[in-house]
Length: 57
Image (tube, rainbow, N blue to C red):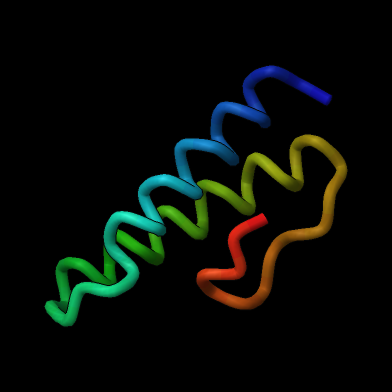
């Protein structure tokens, strides 16, 4: 497991959680960016990507 992967996963999680309940297109876009970053970090660490939004862990 890489430190960089863990940081990406954590930052993506926070970005997703901060924006996922917003109704504006901008909030939804930021939430998707957070999911993408989180999954990028998970893949770097050899974990499968999360497929459901807002699943927490």
